[in-house]
Image (tube, rainbow, N blue to C red; front, top):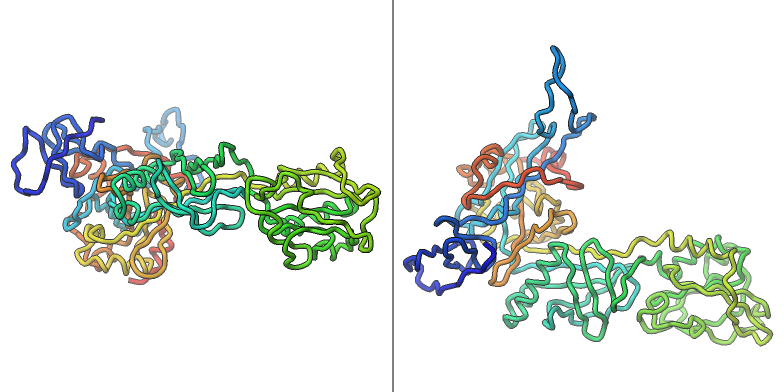
Length: 513
């Protein structure tokens, strides 16, 4: 089933099946597929003259909180003893996800699965589908101080523009990738490269990105970034000023001066508020940079891959002449360290008040190790962002705006492959989800190009009826398990739910009808 089918023109909706090929209507491409082959998306195939969803429908198991072991390993049953375990998990809730569910594009007909079940006395309905998202993208958080490229620089995959560098956050560089303009507003090559990169990122696979005027970065959800060919290990503990604030007391009495080198705010302990509170003496140090407040300096260097995300390889390059009238003296000790503790050096002033490198003293090693201990692992985070609009909502209710209003009123809980989604305030249903919380290979594509993402809407049965839901399409979980769906799905049951809590009964109980 891995070969791509030939695609035929579909301008005539009533065209006769060609050479025993049948037409798939799961997306706008409308492939004609020969028996034993799959469509252009590789997600649907012709099996014995019927369109079949090739990936299995994924059903999650959520164990209830019982206070007892999940599986009772009983050797056997005596009179009055519990029955032996039959191989099924105890007190589990089955949650039908959109993964492998198929689509009902265009959604004038009910979603592929509308599943009811009672949980703790609450009658719930979960409407399940795979949405086709042209209006989608990913936000990528890269934990690093390293300079990866200027803000608003174009990000490329396979040479094609697929997004841009956006505003950095504390200890992280940020990318905004995808979106309808890259998917469908440019050349075919740009759309294909964008779709391919988005799908791989959402499916937790590594993607190499090149940033105009910056670095080459390998990004993979849940893995350390590789920047300019070098893997990152630590996310900075804080800016240089914050590092001074956290660890000034660790250095008191062990060294005369500490400079924490940082691209954003370089800290100097003797001038810093933390040092003053501790009674730190002046040292006559001079920092080449723009002074913000005492002990805090901006622009000591251009951003780069050196100390603290600067271009600096020699930290002494940010120092000016020492002032003997303000405390500088021969023998004064100086520690210079980066915000991750990866770079550090020790100096003492000679008779001409010039810093001279010395072997690193053991008395300061623990303080550098403490910086390292407080640095979290450098990781890449990928958030899928999509707008659930258009005809997708018509698969839930005959009046689509009712679904939007229900989501905004918190009557309807939105998940992506069982993972909780953050729904943005304001109009529409703009959602965002951490792909690390979705099951593996949860995302697909159609060659329009667009991304295919699972999406589930869970709400109380009475609410679903009130918003004009497709009540004739409601089925039970046992029915889904036994007979699958329109596309003869295989079922993959018992995938671990991990951190994803379902259903949100407290939310659904307290929302008024």
